[in-house]
Image (cartoon, rainbow, N blue to C red; front, side, top):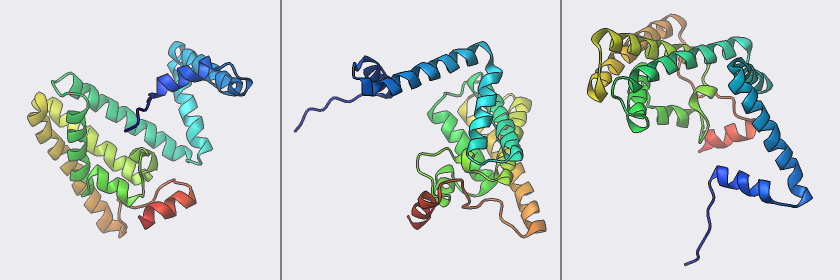
Length: 202
C-alpha cells in the first residue's frame, strides 16, 4: 500500500500559483488572464457568449451550427429551470429525465449516442449535427411546454412529460427520414482525425 496525495482542479491551480520557479510564470499569467476575463464576463455576460462563439469558430464550426447550438442551450436552460422549480433534483434526476427525452426522440440512450460518435468525456451536444441539435431542442421544448400545461411536479410526473415530449420529436424525425432517406442520428463528430479513428475502432 502506498499513501498518495490527490488534488482537485482548484487545488492544482492554487499549487501552481504558489510555485516560485520562473518556469511556472507562463501558467500564472494564463491564470491571471482567465481570471480577468471571468470578471469581465460577470460585468457583461454578453462577452461570455461572444467568447463561446469565437471558440467554436476556431474549432471550425459554421455560423449556422453555432446559432443552433446556442439556441438549443437556451431551450435546455428553460427546461432545467422548470425542473429545478418543480421538485426535480439536480444531478441524477436531471440525468434520468434527459436520457428519457433523448432516447424517446433518437431511439438511443445518451451513452449509446456518445459511443456511436466515438466520444469519451466530450460533450455530446458539441458533436451533434445541425439536425441532431434541432431535434434535441424540439424534444426539450415539447417536454417543457407539456410539463407546464399539466403542471408536472416531481420526478414521476416529469418522466411522463419527458416521454411525451420526446415522442413528438421522434415522430417528426421519422417523417423527415422517410422523406430524405437519411438518418438523423449519425456517428459524425468533430473529433480530430486520430481520435475519431480510435473511437470508431473501439
